[in-house]
Structures are given as C-alpha cells and as structure tokens.
Amino acid sequence: MSTTPLVTALNSLKQYIWHPCPLEACKTTGQIKRFIHVSTDEVYGETEEDAVVGNHEASQLLPTNPYSATKAGAEMLVMAYGRSYGLPVITTRGNNVYGPNQFPEKLIPKFILLAMKGKTLPIHGDGSNVRSYLYCEDVAEAFEVILHKAPRNNAPAQKSSLKFLIYGRTGWIGGLLGKICDKQGIPYEYGRGRLQERSQLLADIQTVKPTHVFNAAGVTGRPNVDWCETHKPETIRTNVVGTLTLADVCREHGLLVINYATGCIFEFDDAHPLGSGIGFKEEDTPNFTGSFYSKTKAMVEELLKEYDNVCTLRVRMPISSDLSNPRNFITKISRYNKVVNIPNSMTILDELLPISVEMAKRNCRGIWNFTNPGVVSHNEILEMYKKYIDPSFNWVNFTLEEQAKVIVAPRSNNELDASKLKREFPEMLSIKDSLIKYVFEPNKKTSA
Image (cartoon, rainbow, N blue to C red):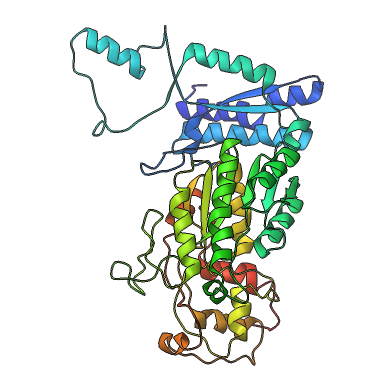
C-alpha cells in the first residue's frame, strides 16, 4: 500500500503522542533517575517587539506552526507523567544551535558559504528581526550540567525552593498575601523590623533567608489619606525612607522586592481625557500632586527606578471579596452619605494578588500598572451592589466641587493602561468581569 505524506505524519503522531513508549518504559521500570525531554523555544511563539520581559519557564505556550505545536504537546505529556506517576522529568527549551558540521541549509553556514562565494545574502523582512543562538559545545556542556545537577519535578528541594519575606503583617494586602502563600504551600514569614531601620531589615533577612521580599507596608492614613496631610514626617518616614531602605538592603543581598505602590499619582488631563479610554502608561510622569500621600508615592517611585531589583505595582482603589473590610473600596463608598460618580481604574485583589506572586516567580521587574483592564464608575459598582447584595440599597451623588468641601486633600481620578500586565497574563479579566466573578457572585444574596 502506498504511503502518502499525510499517512506518514499520522503514523508519527501515533508513535510519539498516542503511544509514548519512552515515558511508559521509564514509568514501568521505576529505575530512571532523570528523564530529560529536549524541547524548543518555539513553543513560546513569537516574542513581541516591545516586550519588556523575555520569555521565561512559566510563560504561556503559544506555538505558531505544526512543529512547535507537537513539541508543546510532547511537553504536556512529559509534565503529565511527572505529575501523575512521579517520573523525574526535566524539560529543556533551547534556541537556535550552531557550530561545525551543521547542515549547510541552516542560516549561519548558509550565509558563510554565500559570502565566501561573493553572492547576495537573502534577508527576510526588513532585517530587523532578532534570534538567540547557542554554540553546540555550550549546549553539550549545558546538558552535562542539567544531567547531574538540575532539580527534577519531584525533587524535595523544589518544594521549598521559594521562601517569602513579607512586610505589612497587620495590613490588608499583607494579610491576604499570607493566605495566598498558605494556599499555594509557599513558606513565608512576616518581617519584624521597621522599614526605616536598616539593622532590623538586615536581621530579618539573615534570620528568614528569603528568596523574595514583598513590601505591603506603608502609610495610607486612617480613616483615609487626609491623615497624611497632618502627619507628614510620619508619612515620609515609612513611604519614602522606609521603602528606599528596604530596596537598598535587598539589592545588597540580591533579592527581588515586589513593592505594592499606588496608581493614585495621576489625574485625567488633556492627553488622557475622562472617558477617552486613553490610559496612563508605566513610563508616563505622574501629574497628580493634590495630596501629600500621592506626592510621597510619586517621589519614591521615581527614586526606585534606580534599583534594578524592584518590581513596582501600581495598585488603585483596591477591592476584594471581603465586603466587611473597611479598606475595601466597595465597603467605603457603600457607607458614604454621598459619592461622586467618576470612572476609574481599580484593582481586584482576589484576582491580581496571586498574579503578583507569579510575577515574583517570573522575576518581573520595573513599573507595572497593577489594575484590571478598563474602568468602572462609582455608580456602576453600587448598581452591582444593589443587584447582587442589597436590593434596598440607595445612594446619593454629588459633584467634585461638593466633595472638596468635606475632604482635606483632593482625590486622584484616572485610567491606567493595563496592556503591559495583560500581555504578561492574557487570562486576566476586565474590571467589570472581575468584579462579578471574584466579588459579587461569591457574596450574592439576591436571585439576580
């Protein structure tokens, strides 16, 4: 019977996907110490030209051709055998290899041969595309290291490879981080030292020996940021001096700091008008100086740019499923006598705090707008509250001018562009969808 290319391809699929013999053999013998699966970086797909962070082991697999799709599928099988049967698997994703005796049709030998003959070198596109390469002897040495030293999927060391040091134990976000670590089985300890006391921070690091540090400590004021207007030295001590001291100490020890900052350092302007959908990007200069709290946050964010070990997350009007927490934005506005009605970017902690933990694992750095995509207004939130929680709930609006008469410092209103975070975590929900899924559906008390 004649064999067509399609039949040949299907037979290959049967052999390598439907009947994974090497994996089955290793599972059956139970004597294999390491199963190394050699994959490819093509499983990541194309890297965006403006990507700030390169592909890492936890990046989403987005193969763009049949070859890379089969390699991604093979990775899934290897991972499944590791998880289901405890097989000691290791997967490597190498990029383009070059060296002596390489096939002449490959890029580097092809260009060398053409150049030696004085012929034109074929350039695809405009010539600006870049690729990563590995020399063949380096690849061989890398496999030697991986064979003998790489942690396996079931290695005990990997279970405790992370340990977090969290500052902000008594705070809202700090407490939630501890619960996330408990749920994910990540060892952690809360910092005992005051941020502005360098010796105390050093003692914490020496005692805890963390792999990552999370800073959820800071002064926001009680009951609100108006407190900062009359307690400026205290605000500076923690928000500026303390944060910078922590970043500096961690830099000396090679530690990444996930710093929960604020996006309340912007306000709508001519370039970012209200209702335009044009949000402030990470590289934009803060333009809101209405409150002393925001001034200190903008100041420390600018200074932290000089620290390459800091990941700054701009949180805005945080919301969680705990509607009893007085720091929850929904809880706040549901208790106000009157509220303004302005669309804003906001942060759903139930969805985004686990993402911040993943960002630590991915070694993300720099500034990130840490909000769900899109905006939502005060009235839209309260309408959801009325629909899902309390049908009898009512509220009264007032203007910004009227609000100014009952507060000490103006409040920030803005939209942050969350596209950078969305590219890194494509599964992240829009603000309104996230509100429903993580906040209102779990608290639903009506038949809506």
